[in-house]
Length: 122
Image (cartoon, rainbow, N blue to C red; front, side):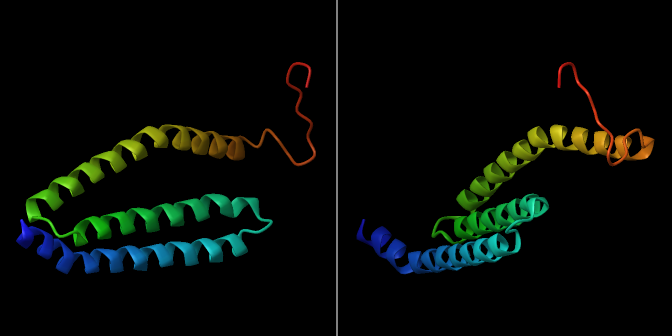
């Protein structure tokens, strides 16, 4: 039992260093992107995507630096890939639908700046 504890204590340093590295990268990117996006509403999506990618890559790096067997790391990485794929698949339908609707409105040119749109009582 002591050999397992010694193994974990010897190898957990790389996990903590990886966690510290990606935590500091995430925090620095968040501060930088918050300064860039101040007052600009169109940069919010880009900021979110960048921070999401940093968080996902950090999670993968921390999982791969854990002191465990290669098979277990592979199973965890497969599970994480399935979860990320499910999130992207479920969220992309709305994103693609709204994007195509925006492209269609731009191509038809049915609205111009200064037009008033009336819907029911509004």
